[in-house]
Image (cartoon, helix red, strand yellow):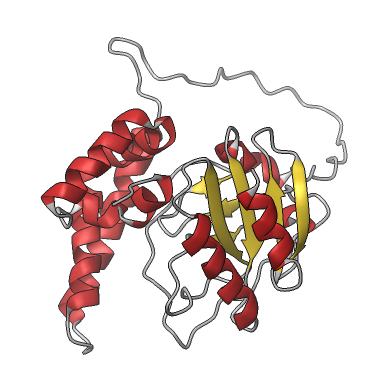
Length: 273
């Protein structure tokens, strides 16, 4: 069995909830010890391990339980989510050193002044406020519910996505590896099939990162195994649903095109790397 970065990403829940076999657990730990990217992800999860593990176990229990409404499960999930958010806020809040009083803004004596018209508010660039931190865990979307796509504006970043666990990712996360980024849509089954064929053929290559990005937060297509990400209002390098881009280790574009029409050219280029 080949355990790579994509396998670790898909099996994080099982890893933290003791859902792996002894062999899988040993192989996963061996990969994490030798992979800086996966080790960073696991260390970030360990920082809030009790709540994350509790949340993952609840999600696995919900997925395995019979499909019937249970108010107690929903209530328990809400408590776990709330506790996780509070812990993350406390973890990210700078602590005050003992013996040092909290900073207090100096009070100035008010002086009568002539009435001056207040300047108009200055708009800030929302892109600079993007935090690369784990947001609040969310329940998987229902099959009949589709969240609308986020439309990128002219000031949007080139590439900003989030994985199913809620972590933000940019192109910097793929530096040092060849990255194949495809944009899929539930309305384009041929593109989804092409991504799955590419992942089955080249997914075991540890030098390649293959991901499928959706502009809508919908459930993963059935009978597929390729890793999925969700667009967070970025321009996605100019890609449209059904298109792909292949980046080299330095982040330069090697090839872009259609997942269907240019499938053979892309497969040939990947084989000849």
